[in-house]
Length: 359
Image (cartoon, rainbow, N blue to C red; front, side, top):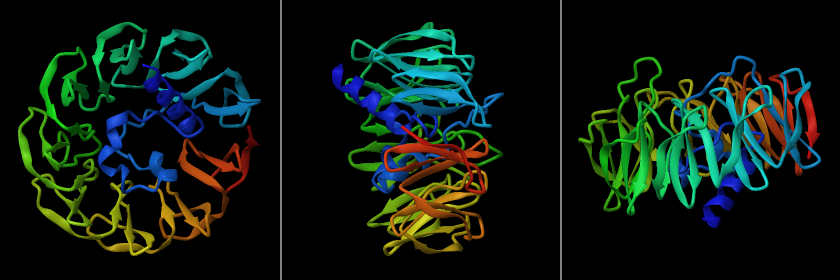
């Protein structure tokens, strides 16, 4: 399907210098609460795969390649579009077809798909003939393309859309929870011992609730919008306000925010009035609302917007990189992507350029 192909390439372009590709249904519930420029930053529950030798996307003369953390180019820019690495592989696009390379630049899975996404739990969604299926890291089709849409795997399950409804399959493609939901988010991923592990938000008749991995509704559909559990809490919208619940459905932080993000590193971005700040898991304001937009904390820093420009603060709320960028993204392995006009570069945590903005 041409539409899906075009949207997939657009998705890759939008995050090409940012990070792993986000699967379509993963941020549906929170999408309307997240300022568009920071949408990529907000799904902190996604699996964060650490590569042995992290590589970073660079762009030269309209083509994409990869550099080491020192700024040295290690894979020459030659791809039309590319993604960051996940589980040792990265999506690349050649002549509008999607394939995968390894960290040496070797083509492991030849470009042949109409769309393709990042690997999670050894599987990646790919598109053939307008349908979504899954491949393994060798490029073998392990779940035949048959779904109208699909998500990445988390906790052994992936949300898939069939005949207009969402359900869940396991990594072999077996249906574990039959398609019956209007929308479905991914299951909470492990990390420490959060009580929210194994729950996923689903939409039924205009209301969001939560199911467990057996498909049992554990929190009845009652929310206007709902997010993914992180650090034992999930952001939910009750009426026009956002608050947070625990995995029993009990309201832990009363609805009081215009918008709210999921928790990351003990902080969650919340909007009060027209300004954004941060709360902790008890609901205490730890960074006063004074920013136009915010992102999640990553490696001790978070993106904030002041006067229309993007910079970074630390966990005390102090500005450590002055707002001067037209856009900026999370730190990953010590570097962050920043944008000036239509050019992208990388900075370190002190704000020094490791890769000067290029296009």
